[in-house]
Length: 90
Image (cartoon, rainbow, N blue to C red; front, side, top):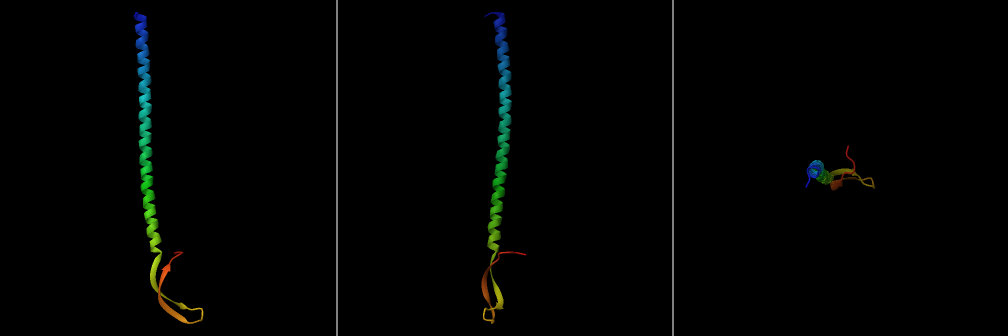
């Protein structure tokens, strides 16, 4: 092998080494981005679970048992105990 061919080969190796290092840096950046996306998606799943749990509890609070008093359709006064469901809260 001639000296010129040896220099060309070393130059080619150095170029490929630099390209490989650049590719590894790009891969590492993508890995970091993927890790961040995984973390954000896990936080989103946890937040969704918390909101669903809260919604179930709020729906359960709408049901109740209580006393009532009022007038019947015949004009008679009535009192009693009943099961209620709240449509609106204010």
